[in-house]
Image 1 (cartoon, helix red, strand yellow):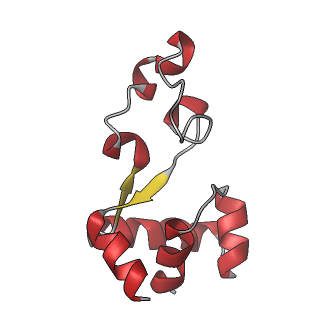
Image 2 (image 1 turned 135 degrees about the vertical axis):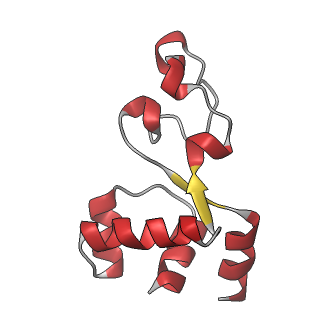
Image 3 (image 1 turned 90 degrees about the vertical axis):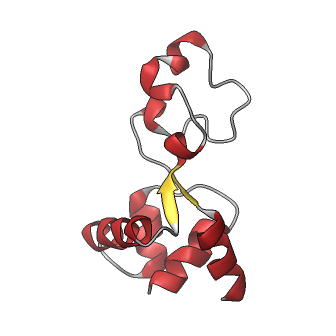
Length: 95
């Protein structure tokens, strides 16, 4: 099931936790556990952290997220976004 989540994260688009869980056929709680496992294994990370984003520091209010592909999907919008690390992208490409 973790491979399916890797594939989902590697694809284009953004999904809410409900949408991602539905696509994988799991509960949101299980999805959270799966994401935590991918982070612990070094396959995924918090997108805001990965992008050295300032959303947590009020960037949304000051327009600092303009042009960011994650604008509207990250901490600055009150949600969490995940991205694959290089290790995760390699694993997803291997299928």
